[in-house]
Amino acid sequence: MINRICSFIAKYMAILVLVTAIAALIFPYCFNWIKTSAINYLLGIVMFGMGLTLTPTDFKIVFSRPKDVCIGCFAQFCIMPILALALSKIFRLPHELAVGLILVGCCPGGTASNVITFLAKGDLALSVGITCVSTILAPILTPLLTWLLVGENVDVDMLNMFWSIVKVIIIPIGIGLIIKHFFDNFTQKATNYLPAFSSIVIAIIVGSVVSANSAKLINTGLIIIVVVALHNISGFALGYTLARFVKMPHEKCTAVSVEVGMQNSGLACSLAQTHFATMPMAAVPGAIFSVWHNIAGAVWAKILISKSAECNE
Image 1 (cartoon, rainbow, N blue to C red):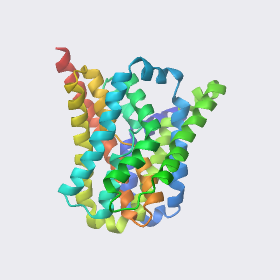
Image 2 (tube, rainbow, N blue to C red):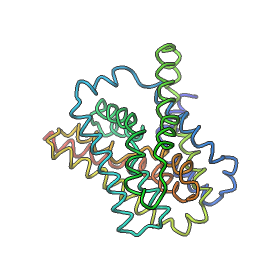
Image 3 (tube, rainbow, N blue to C red):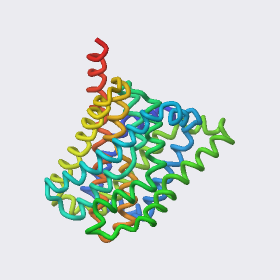
């Protein structure tokens, strides 16, 4: 029964997050128990769970196929930040929302990208490799890119942001890897429940951010939803196009496309709450992205599967 419940939650994560976001928007007082300061710890728990699922084999691809991983990471940290900056200018977003959107663009790939790549029948090993490397690079590249793109107007403390990412992402993943190494039997049983647990935690993070900004979000919600959707969809399309341009086969193009389009939006929310506390709306794009990219990712997987059939004909 527990396994069936967990499978159901993981399968319908997008709906869970969407319902939570709507509830937080309409009934924000129901989420007052979630303190914004808890977001870092919640995300750390998700990253710890990611560490429990990784194996040494997941890192071998970095050394056996470095070119593919480098292309994916290059696309990740070039396409999404530039897209975010361009969209914020084109739509003349309010400053807080522009900072938040750019912060989303500068984050590494999200763990949900591996699930979507699997559903899309893409190169799962490559997807995991890109996620791992982009996450390792994030403490350096995310603060640097954020500073380059918004630093003229906002005081971006690169060193503190670096340390925040290390504490929230790298250390929890490292602890997860260590525990998996020494207690493999336990972690194999625990990993059956991790997707559902991570889904619930992400929903809580989204609920916290949306409820804290519900009034402002109602006033500016439509425009930021449109921009976030365009950011995500354009990331999918441009990631696939770039991979195709360098003559990757469809399965690899699928992995790169999904990795580029799906961001660690939970990290964006965490960084916005920690480093842009004077701009509460800066966390909103990350919260909306968390809802949208899971829904769009599932649809994109269907499109990529049909594309795979065309490529194999």
